[in-house]
Each structure stands twice: as C-alpha cells, then as structure tokens.
Image (cartoon, rainbow, N blue to C red; front, top):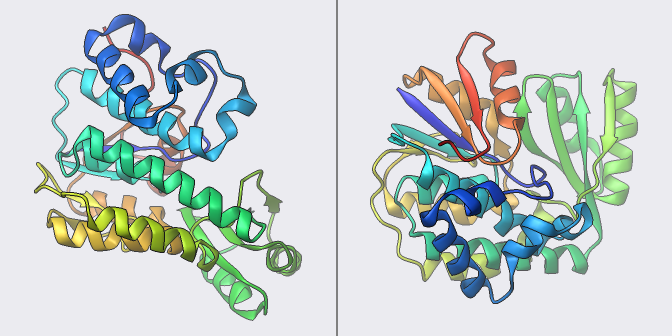
Length: 295
C-alpha cells in the first residue's frame, strides 16, 4: 500500500512553490485563491521573500501547507491508501485524503498559526532536540524537572524534541547531557509547540475546528496524538483538537503504517526531513520525496 506523508514547520525555503505556479494552471488558481482567503499576498512572500520573511509563524504554516497540498493536486496518479502529516502536516494530509476542503484546510491552518503566535507571546518558551538517548530516559527527565518541559516530537528512535519554558528546557538539557545524550540542542522556534503552554491556542483553534465540516476521507489518516488510523470524521476532529498540546508520535506512526501494510512512503512538500526520519525507523522501506512540479 502506498503511504503519503506531509512535512511540518521548518521545511520552508525561499522560492518554494514557484515552479508549481509557473507550470500548472491548477496550481496558479489555488495560489490566487489562497491570497484571497488569507487576505495577504502569500505567493509573493513564498516566491520572493527572504529566509526571515518565511520564518514568521503566520507565514510559515500556510506556506508549507500550500506547497504540500497544491503539489499533491498536481502529482500524477495521486491515489493515497493511507496518509499522515507531521504536526502542521496533518492538515495537509486531511486535505489530501478529502477530509477537509482546500479552503477550510487553509483557513484552519491560518487560524492555528495566529493562535500559536499569540500563545508564544503570552509566555516566552522554546524547544530542544535531544539525540542519542532512549525515549524513556527523556520522559523520566522531563517528569523530574519542576518547570514545564515535556516530550513534544518522537521523530525517530534516538531523536526526540522536548518543549517547555526556558527554565524547564535548560534544566532538562543539562540533566539529559549528564544522562548520556550526544546532543541537547535548543531550536530556533517561536515557542513551546506541542506542550501545555499551547493551551490558549488549543482552545482558540478548537472552536474553529468544531465549526468546520469534516468529510469521510478516501483513506485513513494516522494521527499525531495516538499514531492510530481513522476514517471517522468525528474522531479525526477530536484528535486534531488535542494535537496542539500533545506530542507528535511520529516514530510510532511510521511503525504502525508499516504494520498496517505500507509498502512505500512518498513525502509531498518542501524538504526531505520525513523521508530521512522514516529511513531511521525502517532502513529497508522505500521512501522518496516529491518537492517540485512533476511534468
């Protein structure tokens, strides 16, 4: 079975999506529609903006979503049998499998980005990548630290991202280094995504998700919060609401997709991060990335 996966924040780059706009009438129409929905010229920022322009959360998230979703629309023989997306990428996956319309997906992504930006401004916070220790060690250390710090992204075996307050992250990094972590590296991010500090954003986004129509998809989505497949619109909705304050269980998602019969993975969107993570979960599974217009 063919599995399609969609990247999250961090995969953006200047010029992203321009080849799609230049080569496909369908893509052009979708980009123009996006400018109208968002109320600003996102295509100009994507095609001509600098790295810093693209770093702003309210730009980054719609930009990656658009690149992935529009690319999927232009890929020949796009017939997913299962889908998943990393964090923000879950919204791209839900458009790709027909749960959400393009317009509703983009509107939710824009609201998500703005809500997260606000939550970050309420309480300055950050994330750190931890490499070279077992997941359970990271979980134990996070539980020991009095300040807010939690596992946020289970990316692949031996690579986990933690999320929390500055004090919590500093303390956890110090303890994890002492417990044998090869690297404990603070990330350049706007705030503590997938942690309890995102609760104000979760509440704000929950209302928008509740008000949106979710359709029965053409294939199951394996969701971040529990790494399980579902095609039930109500379950998808509930899990999507929980996503902002819960960890992204990517390692478990890939393992479960393989167990459910995935024979190949195709990453659709900017970058090749997920392809790399999938190979670290299972080095033998075929995994490829499509990042540009395919003639």
